[in-house]
Length: 342
Image 1: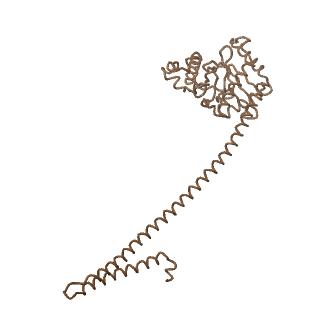
Image 2 (image 1 turned 120 degrees about the horizontal axis):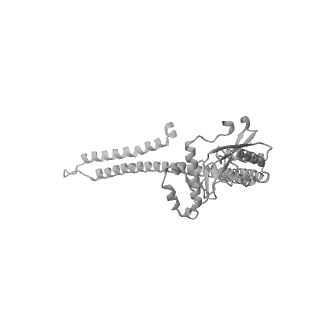
Image 3 (image 1 turned 135 degrees about the horizontal axis):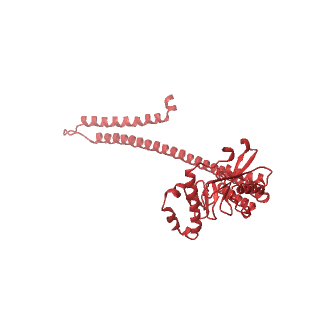
């Protein structure tokens, strides 16, 4: 075997297959030659030997042909086997990557759950501190957390006073210094009209003192509703409930409800006024956008036909009226501002 054949076994096999093919052709050629030159005594060609040679030559050629087909099929089978093995390896690699990814996701899910739980515990502690102490620092911390999460309106949440007016609580910072927070407390109408009766709640000051300041402002304007309106404990409790509800909706999926938009006011147990519109607080999750409240004249009647609204239609009608008036007024006027913005 030549040096080339040792390095090219396939070429060597092709060479040796060519030998019997050539022999076969030679045998057939000899048979034809013999047939042409062999004549018996009667003048007829003798065909036995040429036929034999032709058969032998043909057999050799067919053998070579079938061997070539076998070689081609064998090569294709080996190629398919190699491709199959490669695909199987890729599948094993992908399965391993998926398993590794799932494992990493499990780890991340566990870490995320721990972080979320820690955050919830912190926010619960903040709300508890507000309820227990009603101090300025606790309320300021709660409002700041609500703003960070986008859980309350950027103009601050508001709560209803017993005589129907609202108090809005907006956190601001003295000279823009976040280490020196203040809370702007302002009276406004249900539709959001600024009554220009305001007080600033500062660090070290109790909320009852702020309410005394508001009462004095009301008396100056002949708008004092009476002592029964100034329930500082009840107002703070409603403020805590409002902000805590907004924070809770942002910290975890509530399952049967969509996340609330930034809360302006909890109107009643069923409905909240938010920057995104009028939103349902229980099942089913439902939100009416400001443009729907202002432009869809048939929506109110359509809503009143829903079974889940019929049972407490009075709550829906109150919320619809308040939200409609609020967004109608806001569409026509500039947003509320704090004393520092004027």
